[in-house]
Image 1 (cartoon, helix red, strand yellow):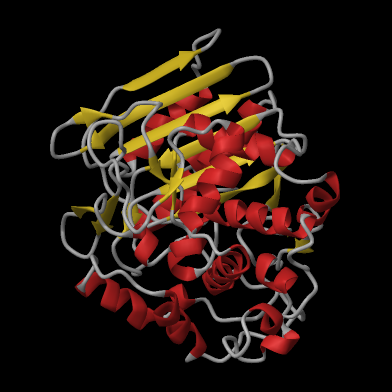
Image 2: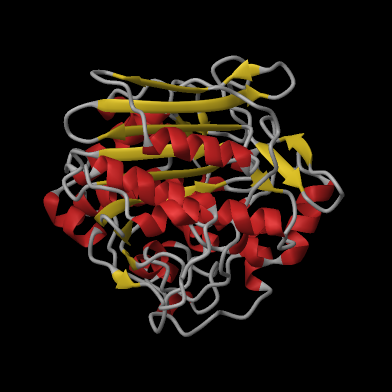
Length: 406
């Protein structure tokens, strides 16, 4: 897995794209100042390579700036706003890890206990795979989203609500990628299992756990676990689009009513807003949801493979990203219609959240997909530099504009 979607192929930040779906003015607003310059440029480039819409929220410790461009709904022409809800994809993993660490604080869950202790007979070799290995992706379990037949079936019947046993059956028909604990490989299967453990130990559903143990304590009003679909898909909701590049012109399919909870589940079914996703990551890194001891566990990272497109490490549902402007923490997410990132400083006091409302309908590498991936990575780097109040390196700006590297 290199530069394709996180939820589809296995990475958490890596994504794909679309061609210009509809023009939209770039709007900037701030609690104290207008956000101009690099972020305006980012928005224009993202729309230029194909996204219907793009939104970014950057808190640099002094002001909160929004950049908004394009459409929330191509059919109606409704403009995207900085308050629209969207599918956050694999950012959900940080929510699930948070719930797990809360149970560790309550002595209901042990990170180094085998999965077979909590889910006996469910996971092949479960006695040698620990809960920690699920959370930090060192289990070796194959990701069900890496199965090509899975997405072929999903394309045929996008409204099918997959059960956890169905998803695990897809994963377990493949051999493990490696022996437990011997390497690192991003796997959505890990978090389906984490979700099953959470439900078994608490006797509650994942929507209830997210609401009671995360949203309510943080005062999040628009953040929830889709069960199985987003419950607000009209005004105030950013539609996501699966884009097919196989023909002479790209075609777009609105995925807003597809059941993200029915195939992403505990690996990617949360819906939120830029403000609330930022508040969540700030709360996590600020130690508001579990103990400092468990926060230290969360930030104890495994080094990412040298050929992985993100440089840094992975902890318990949390990336450490070594960006051109400095080290930050967070996650990213891809669904069938969205690519998002949520990054923060180590103390959670500065945050950068963004969402792009497009995702590829297929797996074919095309010049359009390649260019969109390049812009997406560059856009992420720009948001981090803005968050850290550092100048954007020329190499990042060149990538944003497609200037070949020397």
